[in-house]
Image 1 (cartoon, rainbow, N blue to C red):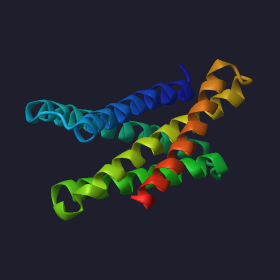
Image 2: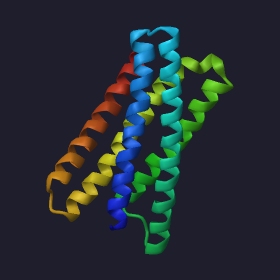
Image 3: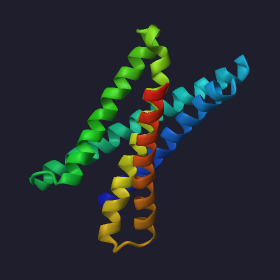
Image 4: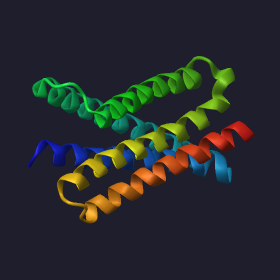
Length: 165
């Protein structure tokens, strides 16, 4: 297996963990579930968050190792990838601080969580786009393109909704 395939598979798992985290919080805040059901969803959210962080660390390690081995200046795609990754780290730290320490900002944790999920979606889409260029725009290229386009559409919509609310 190539390093690109390994990173792509781990990225899909990362995306699944992000989607699961978003789903659990949508169930709690969107439907107003009972206290016992909400407790179960919060445990799932926390577990998927730990999986997300673990996968993120593994992917970051692989990406940093690849970049140092190449000894080249990052391409624009890699630079965008790096900026999105650092933004995810900053948002994750901010979200944890809001939930655990600065409770008066708890309502903002929802928006941060949605933004993190959408940014994860965009990161996976960028990886898919890169692999599509290597493989001459096969099915994986189509999926990557749709994920990237959908990710940016969701980022735009989330920002507009957050600004309006």
